[in-house]
Each structure stands twice: as structure tokens, then as C-alpha cells.
Amino acid sequence: MNYAKSTETDIAYYILSKKGEPIYYKDLVTEVIKKKAKPVQSLSHAIAEVYTQINMDSRFHHMGGSMWGLTEWTPPETKKSSASSAGSASSTTAAKSTRRREKLLEGIQEG
Image 1 (cartoon, rainbow, N blue to C red):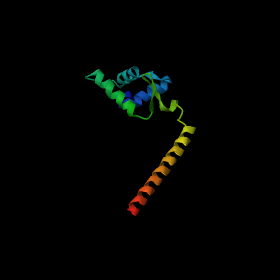
Image 2 (image 1 turned 180 degrees about the vertical axis):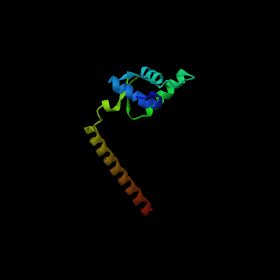
Image 3 (image 1 turned 30 degrees about the vertical axis):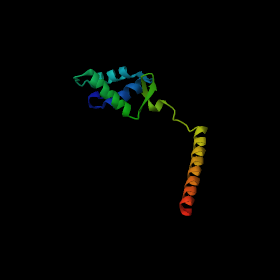
Image 4 (image 1 turned 45 degrees about the horizontal axis):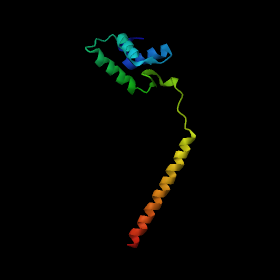
């Protein structure tokens, strides 16, 4: 991999995929900065910049405890039965709202 021509997020992705397990964010970002071999004026600014890029890239997943991994390692979230009860709750709310509007409309028409 040509690190000089790669983006910081591509390097982070490469590091994580090669390691195969989550990495503490500061270790990951420091490794990216080392591999990129780009001169930095402020290490803390460079760390914040790379961390922000990783955080915004959907290929990465925060695993908790300041550990980052790849989204492909986590199973997709499944819709549980609570989603169906939430759906029925929202239809009940919609029905109540419709009845309320009808009563208001009747009151206006009578007045």
C-alpha cells in the first residue's frame, strides 16, 4: 500500500482490516499519522483531525471504551418486536389526532 498517496481513513481501514480486531482510538490514529509520514505542526491537532475523519466515515464503528473497529465486523441491527409495537402506537396516536381534528372542525362549523 502506498501510504503517501492514500487518505488517512484508507490507511486506518487497512490497519484495522490487517489487525482483525478493534484498536484503541489513539493507537489507531497515531499509527495512521506514522504511516502517512506527513509532517505535522501539532500532534494533538493531527490526532483530532484524523479522529474526526474516522468518526465521519461509515466504514468505521465505535465499539465502546474508546475502541474502533470496522462496521463490517458488527452484525446489522435487526428490527425487533418493539418496532411493531411502536408502529401500532404511532397509528393509535394518528387516530386520536384525526378524531381531535374532526371534533374541532365540527365545533367550528356549528359556531
